[in-house]
Amino acid sequence: MEERQARTGSALRGIRVADVMTPQPQTASGEMTVADFVDHHLFAYRHTALPLTEDGRPVGLVTLDRVRGIPADRRAATTLGEVACRADELVLAAPDDALNDLLPRLSQCADGRALVVTDQRLVGIVSPSDISRAVQRGSLRDQPTGGRH
Image (cartoon, rainbow, N blue to C red; front, side, top):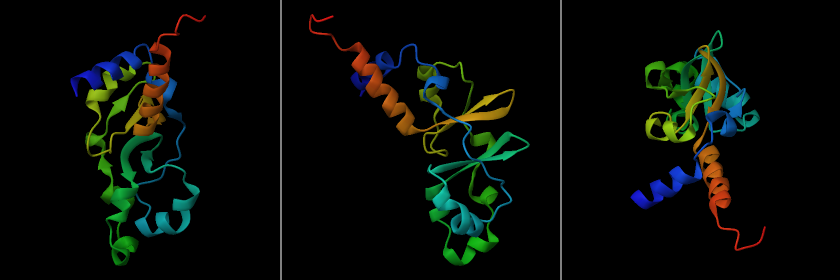
């Protein structure tokens, strides 16, 4: 485990949050019902997490696992805000933060995701797959070239 963390740390050295984030993610209001989201927005949405915003500020994060956990007969009466990670559970990062510094802060609530903010406004999201891609690319960068240049 420690060796893997060391390799990950070395692969991510010098990489900033802005280098891996998905910029300007789609967002929703916490007032939207789970039924409305599932019926009208789910298939248009490419990602498995949806930031909730108020006036551009992140106030929650809904994951598909959380939506899936709401029984069909309760979806019309349940808002996204009720099933979301609350604002105080969100992991927030700045675009210039080092990705290595962000990793230990990723929380269970948000399924390993961080919301990227500038002046308290949402500008991006970092997902576990974004981090995996960065590790793969970084480890390529660290491999010896075998004498060829």
